[in-house]
Length: 210
Image (tube, rainbow, N blue to C red):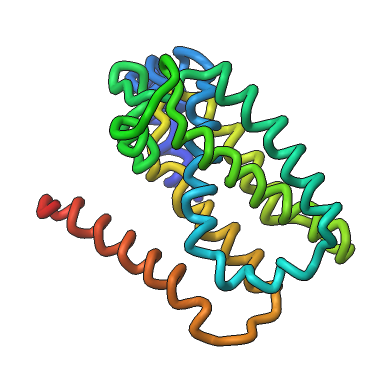
């Protein structure tokens, strides 16, 4: 422990603080709403992969509850999408994500991608369903709260990249669907396959082969 403190102190003196100067310049620029939108849209995209494991949720709520979840989700997603540009823009940190790639190749209204709106709505809808389920089943929504606060924390810097939020989305959706009864074991094949593919792409990219 003393050695670690000495090493940290040496770096702090060299950097003039606990964070390297270049990261202070990047992260101190502004609070980025695009990070939140990208994270919610990516949640919506990956929610489709967890549709089978979450299929038991279909009978958990009545139609009135599903309607309320949809209305609240749209009421949150639409103003957020309308207030924040969601087109591909490398200069403003909107790149490095499947969401921005989709935005670059899909219809827009001005600087706002229609696909990003739809995925943001699905992401908010999925998270709202997790919260409502925890309330109805009377358990603490730990995965929902952790992911929500992580998204807010990530927005303190301008780089809306997939790699910053992807593992946490996988973890949240995986923990939640693990709470639900499974009628067929192979329902987990799609999210497991997606996680394996994502890990493989990461390894190949790190090795400079992709």
